[in-house]
Length: 523
Image 1 (cartoon, rainbow, N blue to C red):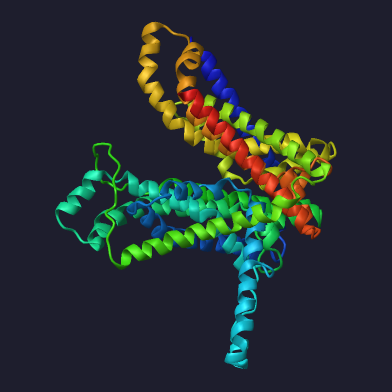
Image 2 (cartoon, one colour):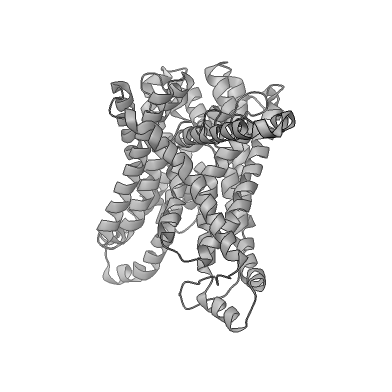
């Protein structure tokens, strides 16, 4: 009987999550009226969405392999800072990342200015033929911009995943390879490649799924007949065409794509089969010669690629932060409130659901991965539009959808720790006759605080940078990412840069506060 309240809470939370996800999706399915409701050009939109996601995943993984390998087998001053830097783009709001990339690779960016200077310097000596083939500037808008932004956002994430894979290889394997005098190529063949076969497919599918649901990148850098994704087409159908039937049909397609990607991701990863070790971290042997220089080049290019846009955002926005108008600060306050509430809901739901061993409760926690935030927002829009003005419920809807989208990430962080605690203390609870709530309060929660703080920080940062949901509902209650997008659209670049820097500061501050709370409480 002591477990019945826990099971009741698990069932209740799981039912709410299912209703929150399936309710809007059901409204989308009903409004769609079948696949034939798609417009003539929507097939091309679906194809581009799949193509750009696959290309982004392929490029991110291909470039991440040498960078992660170099970090795994080299020890140098500042290595920890470089690894920490590789985690920054994951917390960076998409709209801010785009602004930084425009500052570096746009027509007025650093790269174009450098090309212009080279053109002026060499043109008198090279003649007209050089002028015909040498570009005076680069354009970031279109397909190339979408791919560049997705690689910027996802390359560091894949690097961290592959680096963890290399570090998970038992140290005894590398010592054995060294004692046998194995060459670097043999070590890569017998140790590196099995790890890559285990980790890389899953990493590629994670990036593919993220790029399927990427909205801010497509909104700011894409568009036009050749670079429109499904999510961008949904946004255009709702706000510009007010064709809710087409928006619903596109949302059905988006849900189908995400569901298929999640299903494949759950089956494709292969075990590395290195066998157990002595729990000591492995260190890849760092070969000398030209490979040392190549590793330095890969690490240096990766650091510059990540630091360049981040530095451009700081340099462009810092002078005007103090003079930001009150509307921007009000939007920042709304964003912080939404992020805190979303993180609180996501963490609370994840803690309750993670206590379930398996079954439909565990599946409910992962259900939001089958739908993007914009698809859920479209369903919410269809549900509330006939009843009330959507702008009146902009913030509550944003909180609910953001918490649902963050739930699978937080849940996957908590589940391993929760399983370990249940195995370690479950029998003790039964032997002592301890109520479930007492066990949770005295044993489980204190030992979960570290991962809870990290999970809350990730959820808050993701919510701070979300653009997809609030942009459908927002009128006067716009969050800070929506305000930044509007300022960019109205060509107020200086004001947008300062607002973007404020957004970055809020996102990283929320993550740091939550993570620090977890670390401090766990000590």
